[in-house]
Image (cartoon, rainbow, N blue to C red; front, side, top):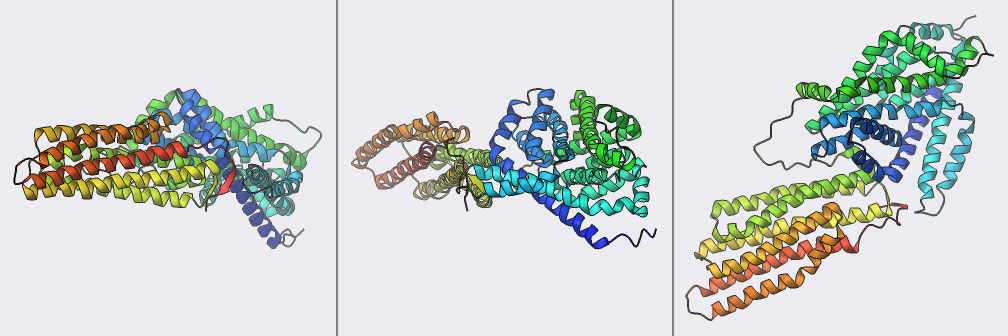
Length: 569
């Protein structure tokens, strides 16, 4: 038989390429729907279950099983580490669990359900036509994505059927019995397509045709684990130091696990055969086709679970080793004005992206509060250099404000729940109000300080005491408004709003004092009156912006009852 002549390359290539494209598109559609519907719960799960290493493994596995992307889980961890909410050693358990979570796809596609693919596509597509904004649309996209995954698998399976009689390909697959060759080929393929789930899917397709033995399939799965490290390392380039450290943990864990097991492929295969269903009635290639897909999926899961159990006791030594390889950068002398938490990777998971915006709002709020707290003493007693330094701090606020608004602009183009859309608008308004506080200090209050120097005015002790009382209360309301925004604390927000009569009373007290001063003798009384009146009004204006932050939080409190997906754009 002339095997070369019997193989038609065109349907083989188009079937494989088209099937893989549908598989990847289905994965993207399914995980995007899951991220939108379950994104808010993922952060809570990570925060709740990382108190010890075993809970951390469970949290990492569950979160990654939901989003089917260990990179998203890693980005979440980087945010926790950067915010000081989690140490690198605590995050290692989550990264180990993420590897277990990625095996869910292999387990799903190993079930022979491709015959239901078109039914799932039809049902999922029909569900997306339910009334706009209905939560069923999210479920529809999930079902549609799952159907496309199975349909892509079915196309790849049909396309590879002729390879069962193509001797050169069978010979090439036999060479894959060399685990190092199989590992290298699979790692390269995974690095190119940047999806270990897709690599595992292709391996299971070949196994379903009886073209891959269990031993070769295990080695190919090992290669997928190594190849996915390239995705993590590339994603960490140009990111904070914590990102590179987390990527190195992921790489170290995967590579070390493969190196340990690569010499025990036969033993792992024996264990997997012992726990997997057998088809004793079949023989030869037909038996391989029936048994191997499930066995490969089980081997993939068993391998990652075993590695986690093996390394879970060494999280602190691993963290120390990674810090030696990727040492922490020394703290820079100049203030950091670049956004720390706004990671583009999380834009596809709106709930998590909004949480990162909240963390960045905390940073810009800290700078605004610092400016307000320094404003009075610098204006009344500072020299030109001190006033210029105070004004310069607004540059940091402007830089972070621009980054936050730009990030929220990108996020607004994603598919958001109704509550997420309202939160997005609240965060834009909060960012604008915080920036307005910075601008007010930079221009008006600093400007008043410069006028004080030009006019040679010295504020009396009594007036300074009255201004200080107002200033202290304004600082308190700014701090409360920012804390209310960060923690969604409505009680604090209401306290800010209810402070208005007290703010007005303190301001009226100053005005009354200044009017009495104006009637007294003194050549510079007009200059004094103008400076002190301006400062009073500026401080009241700072409170106004704090009250707007608090008022928006109360009025637009995100209700859990409004969760249907909508297009914010």
